[in-house]
Image 1: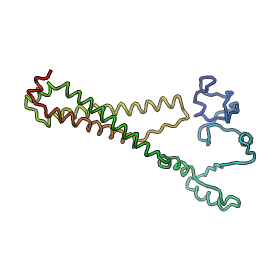
Image 2: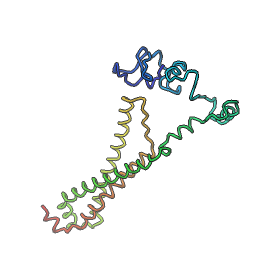
Image 3: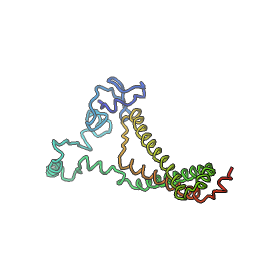
Length: 238
């Protein structure tokens, strides 16, 4: 038997979702799908214990027991009773929440460091791209800047114009990036329904702040350069 999440994935043999009667391979052995159950049973594919014991050459043995409590508040009491049962004193007992905590990035050696390196590279690349774009934009608008300065615009006004333009573009980029992230999740869920794609508000906010601040920092020098241009030279620029 398979659950409805796995059933919604594409069957390589037919090119469509799995249905009763299709063949599924488990440990290189073909199995006929006899039913589809609701997700949440502890696995995507379900076969008899005797069968899996024969496949892994461990008949009559089990490596893990999953016990569902009537109330999560009773988890500790149930584990204490199991430990007090003769023959189970040395068994490893843990709750599902505790086990999932061990699967977080903080528990994987080097993962956070690698993630920080990738983020740092992305920030540097983004900074350089924004810097180059705004520098080019300032060069292309030299005459416009000269006209503004000849009309009495202060340096702070010129800097404000450049930074506001960059801020608008950065905000639009953040919105497009977030929308693209959700679009990728929808596409992934369609083609790979068994793959979890989590999007947290914390990371969205952090990414938006990094992108916005990186863009503003990249535009600071071009804005300062524009404010320092001589009006006469700017008006004579071709």
